[in-house]
Amino acid sequence: MSERTTSASWAMGIVKALELEGLDCPALFRQLGLDFSALDDPDARFTQDSMTRLWTLAVEISGNPAIGLNMARVVRPASFHVVGYALMSSRTLAEGFARLVRYQRIIAESADVSFKMLPEGYGLILTVHGDHLVPTRQSAEASLACALSLCSWLTGRSLQPRKVLFQAPEPVDLEPYRRAFHAPMAFSAAHDALIFEPADMEVPLPTANEAMAALHDRFAGEYLARFAEGRVTHQARQVLCRLLPQGEPKREAVAQVLHLSQRTLQRRLREEGTSFQALLDDTRRELAEQYMAQPQMTLLEAAYLLGFADPSNFFRAFRRWFDTTPGEYRTRMLGVEAAVSDARTPACTAPAP
Image 1 (tube, rainbow, N blue to C red):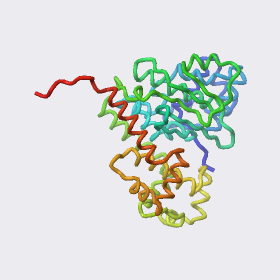
Image 2: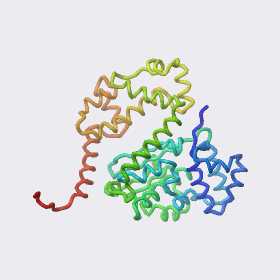
Image 3: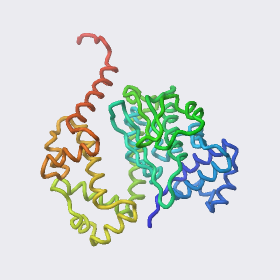
Image 4: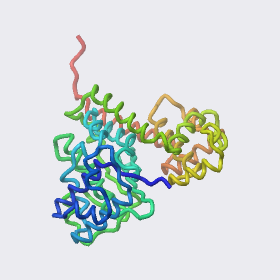
């Protein structure tokens, strides 16, 4: 079975966070049977389960269940591999987070990240998966604290989210969380997330550089292509994107394009933690989100491009994905974008010469 992995860059961030607690990380790595010297290799990777064991051992030794929040104090773009530099050269945080979603698997395969407009603002939503072990709360909390710290680092100012959501139950001691996030918090939530003011996500970044952003996109894309080329999930998703405009793709058709039997395709998808039906649904959901951001595309066109012969099936699926109709979702999205645009537009403009 192919196990989910984490980049050495992210693992190094975890190590620095644990060292702030006074822990002997080389000893922890030896105890867990991990190669500490691999942290110096930017292309090295550790399994997600090994990072879960590292967090568990660190909490046990330190006695600090909020130890994951330490990562906010050590985060730099380098902690995110080449993705960090792609974020740094983005025009805005919104553009940077879109890149984070696109390239997340370079940092850690174990995390699913989405960045979307919600009723209360822009949401950076995180779900951490394990293979044989259930991920620790410290893993998700470290990621949220890191993301917020990176926002402040990139903008050059203290940025406070509108709200922070945690899947884990409320801890006994809330003080470390108040210091880390300075925002209203909700525990036992449906997912881990940072909710931001729309205007904060659209402020120009002082480090923005269009040429460097294009260069980093190319590096990240090449790395991701090398990294993903052997994974059937990635290959099947590409085939689905090509076939969807022709109608709902069947497993047999995708398997045929990949030169696999249906049984082998299903087995390999299962080994990578998904199924054909789940992959089809995820691909449609991601494309639907992109299509709703294109005002010139009609809802009927979006339905057919997603392979729905009956538009009513598209509307039902959309409501299941986003708990709203496509029309309401698009109206809300365009409303947020218009509000942000208005906030950036001067009250008066000089007449044209």
